[in-house]
Image 1 (cartoon, rainbow, N blue to C red):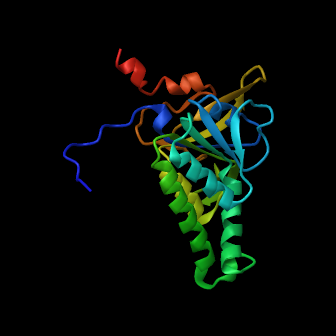
Image 2: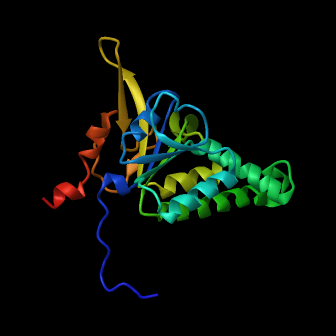
Length: 233
C-alpha cells in the first residue's frame, strides 16, 4: 500500500453523498430518491409500485449482502444506491443474528451482546457500501421521541430506529434530510425538505451549504451542489 502524497479533494457533488432521508409514510421520500442519478433501489418493503425504477427486492439480510456484493463488482450502470427502507433492514439483520446464534431475540444474549452483534454487522456492511464509488441514500420512516430537559418537555421527529443502530445511520450520513409538510394560509399542503437541525426534528449536513428548508423537489436540492460537468465548462 502506498501512502498519499497529496490531500484528497472535497466531494461536493450531490450524487456522491451519503444521504439519510426520513419522513412520514407516503410523503414523497421514494419519489425524491427516484430522481437521483441512475438509482438502484434495494427495496426492503412494498411501496414502489407507483414508480418506474430499477429495484432488487430484499427480504433477508443474506439477500442484502448478496446485492451489495453484485453492486461492488461494478458490472452495471447505476450511480446511486437507495436502501428503502433501513427500518426493515435492521429487522432482517436482527433475524440473521438470531439464526446465527440460535436465539429467539437479540435480548436473549446477556449484557446486550445480541444487540451489539446486530449493530456491528450493520456497521460493517454500511461501511463497505458507503466506500463504493456511488451515491448512497438511506430511507427511513419517521418517529417522534419525547425530550425532557430541566426547563421544558417537547417532542422531536427522528428516524424510527432506536438505540445504537440509530446512531450508526445518523453518523454515517453526510446529509440528514427530514421530509415534512405544513398547511399554507389557504389550507393547501406544502411539502418541504428540512435541512438544518432543530429542537423539533433531526436534520443537518456536513457542509453548511443548505438553507433551513427547501421545496420537496430534486432540482431545488441539487442546485446547492457542484455539478462536475458544469464545473469543467
